[in-house]
Length: 517
Image (cartoon, rainbow, N blue to C red; front, side):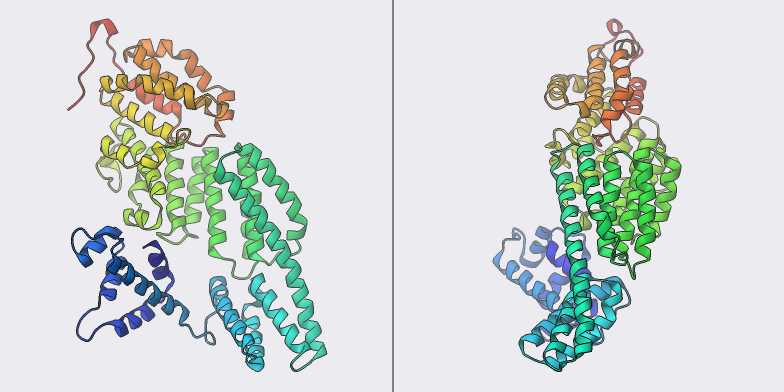
C-alpha cells in the first residue's frame, strides 16, 4: 500500500477525482473509490482497510483486494501522466525536472515516429524552459538531439555548431556529475553497513572530496552536483568530529546552492538539518536552538525532514540538559505523520526517545503540569513490545533499551526485577561491549551492576562505583565514545537519577522491597 500512498502524494487530486468519477457505476460508489477514500484517511492499517471492504478475516493477500489495488494504482498513475506538456509550469526546479523529463519522453517517442519538425519545435521549447536550471541529463539529451537535427534534417551549420558545443559541455559536466554521484553513493554505503569506524569513513570521504573538488568548481550552477559534493564535504567533517567546520561548510553550501537557479528545497533543507545535527554533536544548546528555528523556516511541515528536525531538537534538549525543551518538542510531533511517513524501525526510535523523556518525568526532572502539550501514558511492557527491531541490534539501540528498563525499575523501587536481569546484563557487557568505542556503555553497565551488588544502598554504591565512574568520564572514554552515537542522555545524568533513587538505609537493616503493583 506504500506505493499507492506515494503516488497519491504527487498526483493531482482533481485529476484523480475526475478519473474516479468516470470509474463509478451510476448512482453507486464503486469499490475503487471506496478504497481510495480509506487510503486517503491515512490512519488505517492495510488489514483494517481490507476488512472494511471484504469483511472480517480478509487479509491483504485476498485476491479481489489485490486486483482492486492494482486498478487504483493504474488509475493514479494515469492521473500523473495525464499532463499537458505544452502548457506545463517551470517556475521551480522541481517543476522543471518533472515536466522536462515528461517532454523529453515525448520527444523520444516522436523521434521514433520520425516527426522531425515536431521534435525540433518541442526540443527548442523545452530547452528554453529548463536550460538555466542546469538539470544535466535533460540539457545533455536535448542539445544532442538538436545538434543531430541541424546536421541532418534542415541542415544549418551555425546552429549545429552551437548545439554541438553545448552538447559537449553538458556531456563533460554529466561525466563529473556521475563521478560525484558514484563517490556519494559509496559514502552512504559505508555509513549504512557500519563496517568501519566513523573516523575511518570520514578519512575516506575527505579523499573523495579532494579528488572531486577541482572539477566540481567548474560547474558552480549545477545544483545537483554541488549538493552532493557539499553533502560529502560536510559528512567527512562530521564523521571526523570537526563539527564547527562542518557548520561553516554547510553555510558555504547554502550560499553556493542559492546561486543556482531554483536550487531544490531538499538540498537546502539537508544543509539546514546538518547544521542542527552538528550543534547536537557539539552539545551547544544556544547554537542548536537558533539552527532549529532557522531550519523550521526552510522545511515543509509534517514532511520526513520536518520529523528529522524534531528528532534532532528533542535530542538537543536531552543531551544538553534542557529537558523541558525536549518534552515540548516531542509533544508537538504529529503522531499520524510518524506512522504515515516512517518505516517501522524508525518509528521504534521515537518510542525510545519518548521512553527517555518519561524516565525524566518519573525522576522529577520534568514536570508535565508546567509543560505545553501532553504525551501518551507510558507503560514499560508496551514500550518493550513496540521496539522489536532495535532489541535485535545488540551493539546499537538495544543498549539503551536495557538501560531504560533497569532505571525504570530502580525509580519504581522494583529491585527484584533489577536483580532478575543482573546475569543478563553482565553477559551482555562482556559479549557485546568490550570494544573501545563501547567503553562508556560498558562502564555504565558496570555501574548498574555495582548498584545491584551493593543491594541498592546509595552510600555503598557511590563508594564502590567511584573508579568505574572516573573511567567513564575520562577524556579517553569521551573521545572513544564519539564513535558510538547511541547515548541519548549523558550517562552522568542517568547515574545521578539512579543514585537519587537508591536507598538510604544500610543493606543489613532493610528488606528488599516488593515490586510496586
